[in-house]
Amino acid sequence: MLKFLEQVRKPTLDLPVEERRKMWFKPFMQSYLVVFFGYMAMYLIRKNFNIAQNDMIETYGLTKTQLGMIGLGFSIIDNIPILLGSFFIVITCSAFAIALLLMPFLKTQSNEK
Image (cartoon, rainbow, N blue to C red; front, side, top):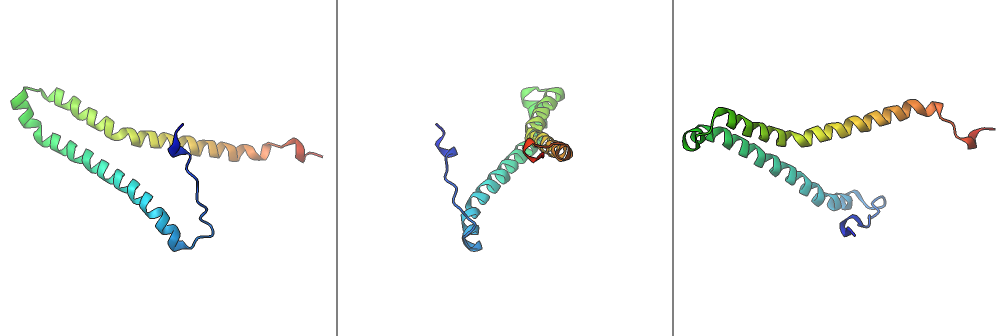
């Protein structure tokens, strides 16, 4: 169904460090550059919007309240990934902590004599 999810993993334990670095450098740089240019584009759009606000008031007759709502939209869109990432980290850490606390009290039937 989704062919890109069915990738075969190449074993890396017996490869030298230099070959492993060559294997992982390209995917690392791709993901790094996507994040870098995405953030840069959002920052430039937001800064250009701040600079253009006076002209938008004069040309289109927008009020400061309307421009503030547009700016709020930029802020919400900019912070959604941060919010989702924070929830993921909190849920993962909480589940791990609960598992660590409950492990001593859990016994399996196979260990009992």
